[in-house]
Amino acid sequence: MSGNLAIVQKYLDRVANLDIQGAFKLVADDAIYYGPDGQPFDKTIMKSLFGPGTQLINPIELEIAGTTCEGDRVAVEATGKTVLANGNTYRNVYHFLFEVRDGKIVTFKEYCNTKAIDAFSSAISSSGK
Image (cartoon, one colour):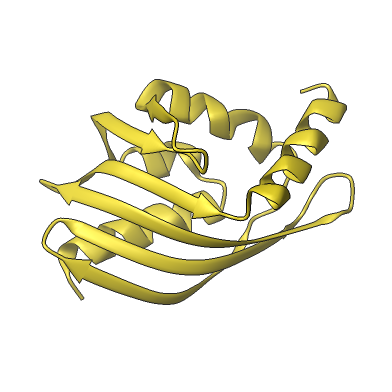
């Protein structure tokens, strides 16, 4: 297993288990996250996006279907499922593209079913968080 793949797998495992602080120890301070809509966010904003969501979900059952590593880039195909605080099940399919340099994630692009994201965002909004 490549070192870059191991870093990405640790990051995804920590996020899936809602260990956001631990996950972000693997992310460079100047990292850029691109959400499903392509909008870029820096590390500070990325951390704030995770905050409200972790209070509304249980750990995520993240199943990695496949990975591809080439140079600094790691691609991950995965599915995820969790139960929301309101009892509804959230499921999504993902393709993640990471760039890792010097042992830290510097770029993270997420591609997923945005209809499912909209439903999750609505759950966060209606909770008052």
